[in-house]
Every structure is written in C-alpha cells, then in structure tokens.
Amino acid sequence: MADHSAEFEPLPTRIVRYPDPVLARPASPVTAFDDELHAFLERMIELMRESEGVGLAAPQVGVSRRIFVAEPEPGPESVPVVFINPELELGGGLEPFEEGCLSIPEVRVMVRRPSVVRIRALDLDGAPFELEDDAFPARVWQHEFDHLEGVLITDRMSPRDRLTHRKRLKAMREDFEDAGR
Image (cartoon, rainbow, N blue to C red):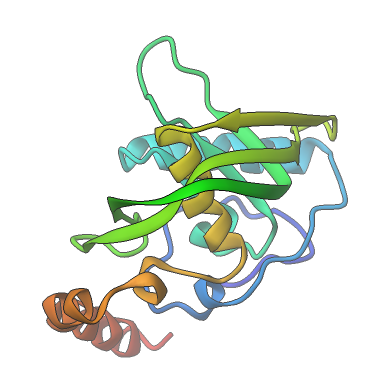
C-alpha cells in the first residue's frame, strides 16, 4: 500500500503485512488536525476492532505518521484512545510477555519491556494529555510506539523465536514478493 505521508486519503482498507517497507521506517509527525485526520482515525479504530486487535499504528495501515490507537480492554463500554505524536518515559524492571502483531499474523513471541510507562501525546484535536500505567496498557503503548519507530516484534525476537518462526516469516516475505510489492 502506498505511503500517504502528505494526506490521509484515501482511507485505508486493510492492515499492511510484514515485510512491507512502511513498517520498517520511522514515521513522521502529524501537523494538521482536521476532518481528514478524524476520518482516518475512525477508520483505524474500525480496522483494529475488525481484526480483534488491542492497538493499531498508522504505519500498519500504510501511513507513515506518528499515530496509534489503543483499546487494551475491548468491550461494549470501551472507548479507544488516540495517541498522536506520542513520547514515552519508561521505568520499572523488564518483564517478559508474549506478544503478537496484526501485521505479522500467527507469530507470537516473548518480548521483554519496561513495566511502567508514562506517555505524553496529543488527542485528535491536538490537545496534550498524559497517562501512566504499569499493566497491560503500558505494554500495548510500547508495542504501538515501536511501530512509529519502524521496530517490529521480529526485531525483538530471541534466536530461539527466530528459529521457531523462520518458515512463517519466509512465507510472508515470499507472498509479499509474489504480490509484486
């Protein structure tokens, strides 16, 4: 999918899969807070929910911008949070936890991450806010923030995980090449 780094139209139709290059490069900051951005964020939330994810970053829908949405505890009363141009402050010890990624289906790996996160970001209207967490939301924020930096769970795999998932990752690379991307 093309990188829409100048605008958010047309709206994304799917989640970009590994090894699409948009997933491997740092995203650019958002500078315009307008109706186009609002429509884009609504579509991101729809795609995240359709895929039964708990977070989704703009590069995962082919748009290299510093945006992610998160809904760590989905449910009928749940409200997804939009993070634009986020910054993380990490603390606590490193804790292992099994992670998956909507852009790398069928691959789950143990990732060690700091246990406490303070995040500063802008909301969909450009207003700043700050949150702190030491549970599952903190992990989701770090995973999605990685996408904004061009980092995937494949970059955080242990040698054992690389061996375990080598066939699946090779098949995904071949599918990507066969599709002419």
